[in-house]
Length: 328
Image 1 (cartoon, rainbow, N blue to C red):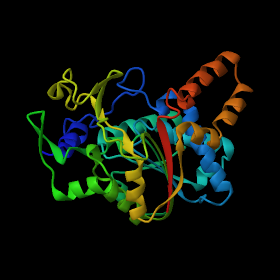
Image 2 (image 1 turned 180 degrees about the horizontal axis):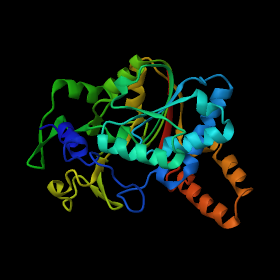
Image 3 (image 1 turned 60 degrees about the horizontal axis):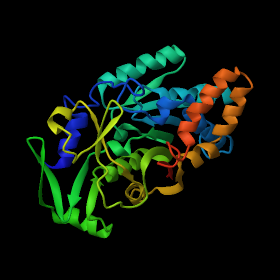
Image 4 (image 1 turned 90 degrees about the vertical axis):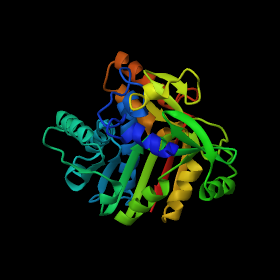
């Protein structure tokens, strides 16, 4: 089978990695910005609040997270919005796009734990189900979880009995690779249909998303497996694909140029593209930390400041992760 089909089964099949709720953080296979600090979500919410105040977003619109895992990010955002203006909780509507039933149940439980019955979340199984006049979409690390094809010297990867074999690539794939001057690496599958579905469901929207990658073709393989915070390149002899299938996470660096091209084709425009560090600081992360320092102990402040260092330090998440803000 094509590698993209194999990766889709690995992540989303009946025994797929994301089929059931997975721990993220120290007890899981990897960390994310969301699991690192609640101030990640607070910063995005602070930016959203500024847009609401300036009339660039609608108070009666929707805040929707795509691929929310347990629901930490949207809950952190709701908490900050309530701090800024409690009346927003009664005017805004909240949603999560999540395809896995077991994960939706975990999200409902966590949201109830955070807010009781005060917050109602609408679940959508697919982005195509979202039909609203205005939405502010937010996501963290979703584009690296789209299946991809692997290409190398005009050949594409196939999988036979959990082993990679190479065969001649179809003309359509080669045309895409040639257009983007790519001879080696990953080509994501599904960005175009995802962008089109989002565009068709809303009259206006803003989409802010974070992921690791660059805005250009690397011409190298970045695809890898994460297991208990260890990284295994897919082509490493030490990796047993059969043993890892469905049990470990598999991911690759995002080509943001491809993301932008897909969304521009669906009628979006780029509002901003920058490192995670620059985005979070522009969104107000440092100001939020200073506010926190005035109402907590020095010990708590230093602990949170250390977490924020992980988010913005160039040698950690700060430069490797990027933010792109797409607007329709």
